[in-house]
Amino acid sequence: MGHHAFPPRRRRPRDRDRALASLFVVPTVGYVAALILGPVVLAVAYAVSDVTVADPTFDWAGLAGIERVLTDAVFWRALLNTCIITAATTLLAVVGGNVVARLMLARVYGRWLVRLCVLLPWVTPVTVSSVAWLWMLDSVYSPLDWAGRQLGLLGAGESVNWLGRPSTAMASVVAVQAWRLTPLTAVIIMAGLVAIPRNIYEAARVDGAGRWLRTRFMTVPLTAPIVAVAGLFCAVFTFSDMAVVRVLTNGGPTHSTEVLATLAFRRGIDGGDVAQGAAVALFLLPVLLAATLTILGLVRRMVAR
Image (cartoon, rainbow, N blue to C red; front, side):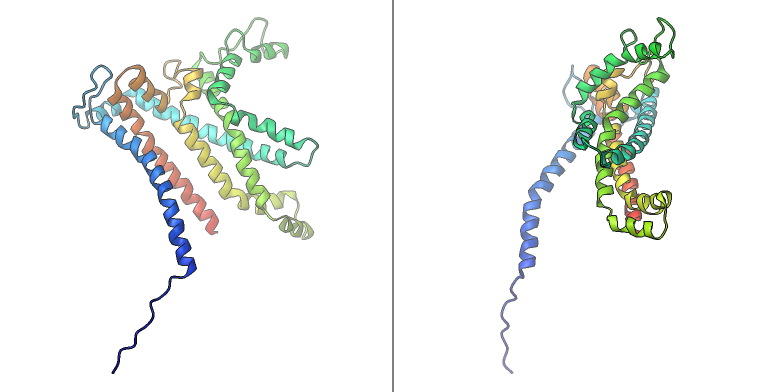
């Protein structure tokens, strides 16, 4: 019985396209992986050493540096402050972003100017905006205090030490962070609102559904995933940010606004203890990773519904 020779199977154009796409993606994935893994590996290496600015030689120290961090009361205070500031900022930015997104979609004359003004806090360099807020919250020359005196909220010559008291300093940091991130959430949420087909609203209106019912059973479920993603961006940016706290309070008064990023900078750069700074910074990764996976899991469940 003779053997039949079958012609070699030709690769379909779709397979070739996928292979070509994968080839183009590899450099980008490699670059991002190196960008992320490089600092992490370096931080781990420094955290298990005793490297300082005065003595840069690498000597193995094991987990002694991490144990010092875990027994430091300032570290736990900074971790708690970081979580509080992140949670409060994310909540305010998401709520404010929902309101601003609807204002940006309103059909009014000069809508482009409104959108431009809304985006200014986000596009302005964070150090520039933080310095501006530092002046606005000054204990002597604050225009907020002047406005309060003009409105009768403060007595003559009375001023609020916005950044000098723990409670007002924390509130000021949260307010500035929320002011800076609200435009970002507004743009993301606005994109989600625009993507909702208008015909389903028209159909619901014809069926007698009022504004409240349409918002509750249509707008909220359809925009919930995009709102969660906006909240994730806010949480990541706030949790890892140090510029606002560094400029406004530098972690004071008495570590009441100290966050992990400023503590790592203070120990590693200002204090010259590179190993301690790396050990503190290393704790940013697991917390951010856990929060990201949790929020993405919630988004996946929302989409599956």
